[in-house]
Image (cartoon, rainbow, N blue to C red; front, side, top):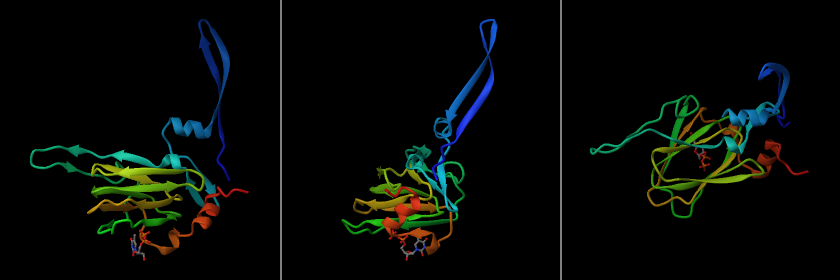
Length: 186
Ligand code: TYD
């Protein structure tokens, strides 16, 4: 079910010397977007996020003649509590990884070395994010299809996840994902 709530505000506004009643109606989705809050929708027991909530997050970078340093803190630069980390490396030319969605896990991906593309899909819209700097991370909320392609030689992808590994959290079939996302064309 789509989350299409509205915010209704009724008040008194001063215009010059007069006080006039005023009414403001704002679509919830727009309000959350303007206040930079995540919006999504409930489907069965899951909260499925919108593709607009996928974000490139710039991490601190301390340049230093001795070598640069970057870092990421949970619930700060990484918008969730980290339960697990894993990394992908030695990817042969032309290979892809991660063609699946998670029902619960949120992820944060950094290209620690080299570069690759992350394709994110909500069942209707598709976006491609190129990661090739170690001080940028890509935040992917739960409930979105994601795939990693175009790995450069010697690329190294570091991934943080908000859950422990569970095969039950995966949707590995794209058609099943489209059904899950509620974006199935009827
Ligand atoms: P998977 O997430 O399917 O990788 P990809 O989608 O990139 O192909 O993981 C591949 C295998 O590794 C799978 O059998 C499960 C295992 N695995 C773990 O045991 N723990 C983990 O944290 C991850 C990410 C994978």
